[in-house]
Length: 253
Image (tube, rainbow, N blue to C red; front, side, top):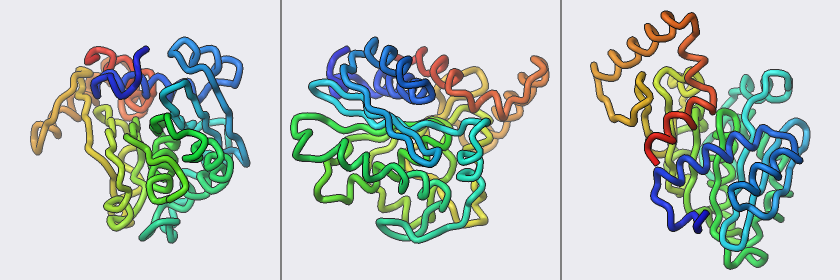
């Protein structure tokens, strides 16, 4: 693998989707899989159910946040705890997502300390709950004078993270991937004041990268639901799986 900065954005999108999947693995398997992608060092952060990995080599450092695990009550609580609270930077952010980052933040600060990583480029990624955590981590790192600035943020199936003032102030280029009817991308509700951050990269019902608007998008979502019915699956949940993102993005790179 070359330096991540030398890749095009499609190649980086696939790499970070794979790392977001690896973030779900136990430490031994994660270390093995990350090594296959040329990351020579793996650090696991875990506290009160919040979990993330730091993968690094000579040139790059990646924070990959673990998403929701159905068997972890702390993850489910974090998803449901949607009270908008004052963020560490500006405006309001989802309380459950913020709490998950708060638990890991002291260790992450050590991991991405600017003085210790002057020659490394910082990237942040995650899927589902991990996508929301990644957005908050990227924002905090960007606004922290003692930390390396993240170059880019890549998320997959991200829920809405904060209020308009918050998402406008994140300050990091964000490739936000959405797969057709992925239900997690529709919460928390707009009526609660939450908004998405970053540029949406949309995968249609055929798994193709498109930018549909208006009625085209409505038709594509209905098409996806119909495909799911024919296969006996609930499309809104299937579309959220990280493997679906990897499968479709791999066609681009």
